[in-house]
Image 1 (cartoon, rainbow over the protein chains, first blue to last red):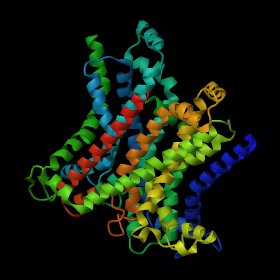
Image 2 (spheres, each protein chain N blue to C red):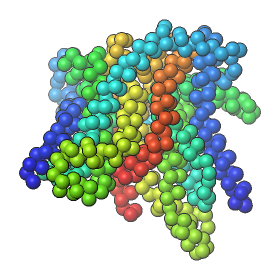
Image 3 (cartoon, rainbow over the protein chains, first blue to last red):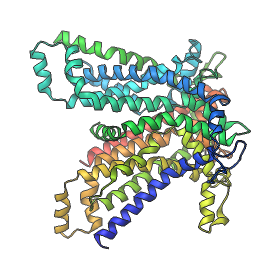
Image 4 (cartoon, chains in turn green, cyan):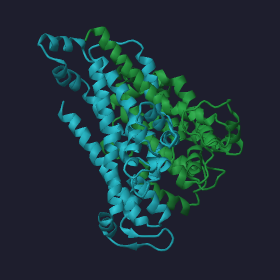
Length: 273
Length: 287
């Protein structure tokens, strides 16, 4: 095969895989635009575009209030987890202290461990503390697990920042606090943005904890609401699809805005780690 | 020095407190509860290793772990293979427009698995896209409601795992392959290496780290898999697609068999740790 033919084949393969990625999204979008009460689940152009499904999902389906709960959780989790990760990662990356290796290994547990491992005692313990059915039941465990990864991530960043910068700051008599905020963090923008984006995605998409720890419909998050609707006997296919797309919209917006830096940051960060 | 040490602990303190209280303590509590018989309401009873003995004799739980193995193949092995094939093909070329492909291929990574599950639930129905495609290529005779089929439900959900992960592997490996020194390929070609030897001796070693990362991410996702199964099949039909995470949920919150649920959680967690440890070790030895 000539080089040009080979290239064409590679492009064709890439396009095929991209089409396969997009196909389920195109499918669910056409389903969401079918007339209400329709049972169509395949690819079929609706006679007209029924945007009313989105309005119905927002009001009757309650996706408006589900989104609000998700937003409250994410608004607390993302900045808090990011700040705590920066602080802990700074200590690991730039300071020497007794027990650092042991603490670091302790942190690695949280890097690998999924919520599936702790959801059972979390439910019974938080219930005993009367914290189930509150936003705290989602916020605190999410911060806890995010901080493990975030500390690891920021440690890698601080380790890679030039030591001469730190030395100079120390000789100038800058405190560790000033060094962190004035000298190191301005260069950490890409790493911190990627981290915060990841935290947002994890928090927004989290399902298991939300399903188990929140029974109160007023505090339920969007993925949990969607998951529960799917399990019901009579399913409003078009409305449900509209709801699924509504809760995906914020994620898509964040992704398209930040994707260049995000994918690059992810790739570099994961290899460094 | 002593003062600096104390400052380090101050920086660590807030993050570690939350981590300790809401990750490590519950994890320890999972282990503790796995030694009790407890219905979640009355007083628990210490039963030693009884829950683990029950786990080993329970065909439903054992089959859920077997299904996790199947998911491992679909969600981890197949996507890594696909990514490697593509990387091998690409290693000899420098292509334009990769950024667009990257954006699309990476998309399933950012979408909630619940949403992915709903989309694929429609894909697999009687009149869904999968059957429409099969009809279009003349395979109308094999169409069925895939998720309701005892034989085909598991591979069907597994394939969704492949769909979620292949883009990640491709993006990772494409980025990695672009970083490999082109002179290595030239040397290999001067030595008369064919595409296969070139792949084994240049591309594969060059991608070692990326492969380890891809395997780690996909393995954890495959073994912990809850959202996708819960939304598409909820473990059914029968127990055909049941996985450990769904079993934890069922035992711990539906059946009130909290001790057994925790035993499953402990085994699942140990399994994840063991696999990730093995991957890290292998990646290091190859160095």
